[in-house]
Image 1: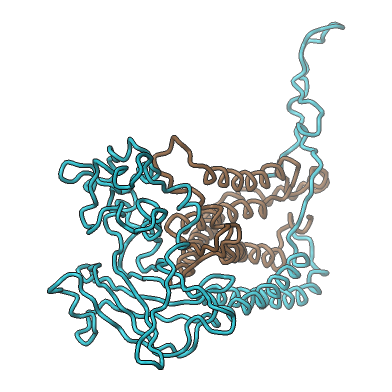
Image 2 (image 1 turned 30 degrees about the vertical axis):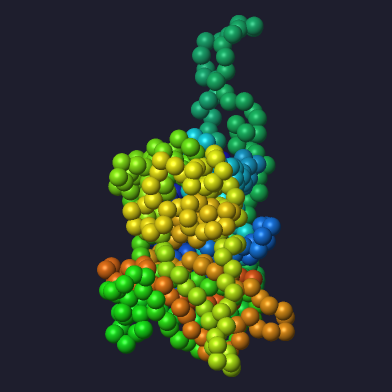
Length: 183
Length: 361
């Protein structure tokens, strides 16, 4: 599914195979880079949400409510925010690393995100009778109805993906490998 | 990963087959899927595509950040700590009260008037409502009005499940530690008598909490009868059916109770207590001047070094005072813009040298 260069290019120029010699794509260096990126992203998710919740009252306008309520976020909204940012960042990182987008890739990646949103809406939309705890009831919808929560989600996703994009572009510009030159 | 197209799966040169022979070829089908020739889009992250993105992010985030920051700075907020640990504080006498209830008064001044709807919160510090055992200690079916759960609360509520051989309603540690201070606000006007500020106690909880998640148990006419066979939580003074005189704010659907049951995320938190509705557009809701706060000090926090505060705050489209979001947007926007400029410089410098790049083998 994933082809860094097309089949015809490879047949024309077999020396490109040297780029993946000695298991170059799965070496320790790559692994450590991804681990550090993961740690950085985790810190961004958690502390981003933490500093937003810390000395403020994060409320929503209650636009979808009939009464003019100003609701306070709680424990579960904090967790839902962090988790939503994480799901979107991880999926978009995968999307950034995919070089060969077939219809299957589109379906899986965007479908994943869509499924997450739909599932969360359904999960928190009803009082499920088999559950002991109704703690997630309405938490996701209420989080989405708040402007600051949206702004924070967009900010955290951007901050998490920025270093990786930067690294990709810089390395392609300054030290392009043969594969990248051919692309 | 680039896959090799190999010819391994061709038919091997075995015994020649007779016409109409049934040796099945092991060659994979010549479909686009199996030969990996699916139509695809192959985007490449070059500097040319990414540079405009960085600039666009910078140009969008910085104005948003400035807007948020300015909005947040226009929000008026005042915080009055009334724990009373300082000996000079008026509430110091309530730390070890001679007579309950202990009432103390704190004077404060509003420098600027508060316009629009004003929200009154109570804030607690060093109170870990997000402790795992604490958060689990509730029974949502009991709070939803389930009659069987009313008389037989869940095991998670231990040790606040039964008392004096009767089930506790509402059970659990969260309900048991409900905040029970009473705060009243008075404006010291030009006349000699102070005017009380009307505080609205309805509309402070989530609409879905009050109308769907929390329900009183069904049954007879009076609320007291419906809670028959249960007892009040250990730390409460009044039982749950006497929380308020109005029937739609009594029992489990009492809004102060619902607000308390929504556990906070961090140890320093604030919860909505009362609403001060705006008067006509000509008069500010809380004019500048001297006020005093009357506190019925019931809730003990000094044993765990906690602090109690009362906060008055106006609100905007983005909620309460939130300087972090504005500053973060401005910072990230500027960084993005800077990175865009740096990339532009690098791109320009190396564009010339890349034309003479030799093909290294």
